Length: 580
Image 1: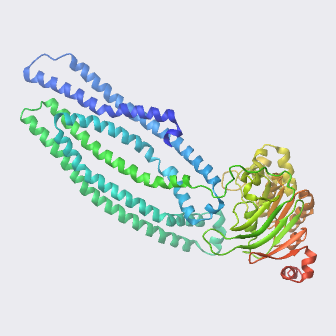
Image 2: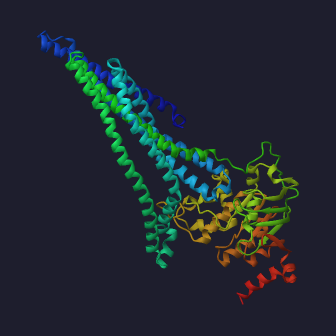
Image 3: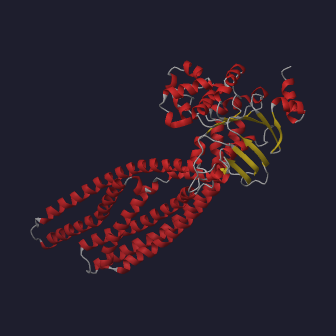
């Protein structure tokens, strides 16, 4: 992932770290030569050799180069972090858009997605950590070679005394990952409570219902529980780490004492002692640093598995390898044959044995109480889900034999819980058919059809006005005004099938009348599926289906169903009574 983010910058960082890793050994070697010459001059009163000044100059150059290299490495790390964050965030968005709707409605997947989103930024320390570990490894090898040259036993002592600390860090790394995994649902609740207690959407009810104390107390309760579990682990890690670090110190000072002893016996020169003392200190420091960095990377790599698992998630609903040609225009229409459906993980059958046809040019309305499967019906038609049993056909062929992309291109949908894009007015309409984003004529036509043109005329910057209050300079809209933009997106789609789920729920009476006054014109030559609780809306359809307990209980025109005296007539009478 790091290499893919920027190969050239990664290569430069590797070269700089290799050079920087060899600096400590080079500095020790030059220092040894300087000290041996100084000792010889003092002990034997010989003339000062001229090369000593060159060695001093070389030591200065090495020290200066080390400082410059450190800053260049930091510069590369900072740039790489930005490149990596951008690339991984784009990959998360791209992959998420390919997944099934069922994934986003699954709480377990929601936890996984949240961890993946967090890892895309929280794991930035791994970038410099991986490079630092490589640099420490090269430095360790070079310094360890120097220690090994004088005494292999000293090197073995240093390693043996550091192993317990490494094992302890690895143990607590696994415990930390396990705890973070368990706490993901709690952290999502904390995020939700933060938004609930401090957002524009919740502010009105929070104030009116006096929910501030309740939300803050509940946040505090969950936060305290999370804190206590984290505190317990951190405390245990600190005590264990401190004890194991003492063992590591024994290795360093034991090796150092042996080096001093050999120098006092005359087996090593003062320069040798200086070199060896520096090499022992550097080896000990780098062993501990390498193990610590490795443990840190291993710790973060455990969390990175969440990101990798997210990328490994594959959609179940996808296009066939060889999709059949999509009909343009559609000849026979859609047909539901004994369609049953239940949501993943649920035993409740939402739709039961549905038989239904939607022919070209026909306008069909779906009505029923909440929870009867109306929106699920739409999700199946748009192939956001596949039936649990039965088939959905398009022009006699199974809907699963067509390309999902082509199917989506021929369906225009406005859901009841439509999106309010806090983008410009142009983009709010243009997302309906993104290739027409710069086609002002088509955008204006869609706006006229949905009555959004009346809203745009009042905006200070017209089509270029930023909507919503999330960003500075944005203008907020009423629910009905937002819905007009959602309708405009559906009209811009210019699809063969238009699906409107409660299309006028937020519109006032006048706007609703204007929308449906043009309904015949807007749906001419195409199929239309309406979902609404308003009988003034559904009575304009050619056929009306009444859904109850996931099955079609009644079907016919408005007049036929009223005269039937069944469920439709009962609901119509109840609604009509409210206006008398």
